[in-house]
Image 1 (tube, each protein chain N blue to C red):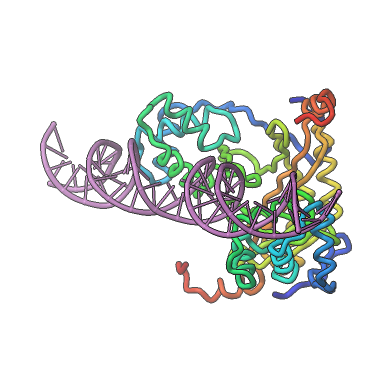
Image 2: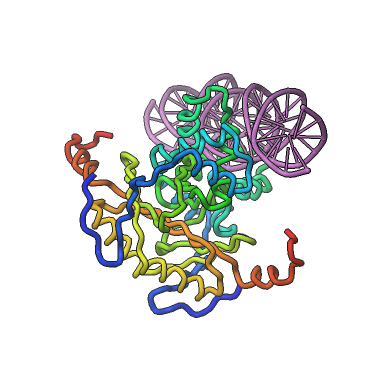
Length: 170
Length: 170
DNA sequence: AGGTAAATGAGAATCATTTTTATTTAGATT
DNA sequence: AATCTAAATAAAAATGATTCTCATTTACCT
């Protein structure tokens, strides 16, 4: 996926994991949540932290049972919910599709640009839009507490593929 | 729900139904969709057109069975899906909540500001945000095909209620 | 080590939505 | 107007994501 230079107000977000998630760190994340440090939570959290961004509960569950086949999916869902409630994880819901989760801590707020075809996700942040949103809420007398901004379109590589398809082809 | 004056770039959308949805009009909407004009579709469409905006499939179904108790909910869902596919109706999904539908034809594109507490929905349109979105997609090499912008917060009346609640109360 | 509230696994429950299937019907064709 | 046929329907079952229940197990405070 090609990415072009951003304007001054829109920034690319660094999605690389340049932090070492060692045992004690993972432990203290759970402890700081006010929860008991269990083997299952350790496994789930490690998988979440080292796995792909924007993972579904199902995908995470599948990663998790490779390390402990007896771990139940209810446990994964339960823990994800707690992580979401404590804003350590961001839940992204697109249409009626399964929710996707991503580690949110120490990561700036951002929105998503998703390819309708292949699902490739770009993250971006735009102060100007954030500001306009607050303005709009204020104009209606609302206190803004959150927002969802999901753009979708065709990514560069899917645009090429589209062009190659015979007319009328799905 | 109180509404304040909007800035020059953000406009209130007229949600009033100042059009007469008579029998022949409703019929031709269905016929123009390339579908057969059935009594059930007539009922569903009339309910949709005269009922509240941002209705759920369930709410619509309940309105519909008042006119014909034998009408099944699958029929409502099926028809809503077809209306959505033909862009006559817009489907709005918030979190994991049931989808809400609204008549989209002849209505300008707009986004939503929803009260987390009471579900009150304000509609707005902001050209500046629309423009910024296109810009962002372009910067990533994407062709923008759509977007979801859902703001949520506390509406004026729920802000008052919040203040009245005893501390710790749900 | 022992007690207890919290956490777990397994599976059932839920909820919105979709699919299936046998039956009915709209509307084109005689 | 009667006939035909693909499309539409009702009803119920299926689906898929997520949540709940509950009997059992476990973390961790004393």
